Length: 314
Image (cartoon, rainbow, N blue to C red):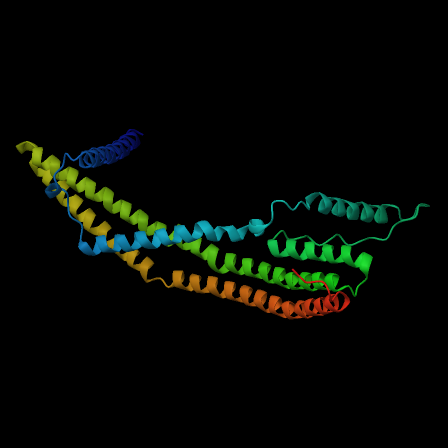
């Protein structure tokens, strides 16, 4: 039992010593950083890092900034209503329709076997996407219905609105596909690169900075040490030098790995592919409907002129 107590005391003393040493190094590094920031340390007394390391730092900083800039905008595709008109209010009507379908289905199920007539179950309405293309499609469809209720299905204005609505329905479908492709193939992997490989390289760089501060603090200690403590201080400097070399090598390796990774270029390519497919689909739909609406416009104008030859169009 006595031996076990001695062992526990020894372990406790060792851990305490390690903690104390770590705390002392951290304090010395903090003092060193403060003195450098205040200009109390000359540039000659600050350990110079390899030029290769500094060049890689600059390139990684640029890569990281590029990811942050595009991600600020790219994350908007995670919310499909990013371009939905604020003045369009459809939520209440959608909710009412959904509740109505739920009540009907509840009655259809629970009134079976009773003397009360049970309504037929209905399918719940399909969720309405809230995007600008969907809003244009719905508004045009409603406008066409309003016009054709009073003039009939052959009215040119109503037909033009219906054709326009059909084009935007196609564009709306392409828009949903586009957003999903951007999020899956660009936004998510783009953020993953920022949060993982770039962040790992940044942590390695922070370790280099801490190690460099510890080395320069150890050099200051050696410079001011009395003869009795110089040997110990010299060993601390040597250990700090070895630590800095090791951490610098690790950071260089990680930064090179980040910079050599083809993922950022591949992600940009996926973004362009999704956008190209969407805009091509939109262009095709609008080009088709524009020809059809133009025919209606020419016919309407010809009819107008033949019926009113004395009138001049503005």
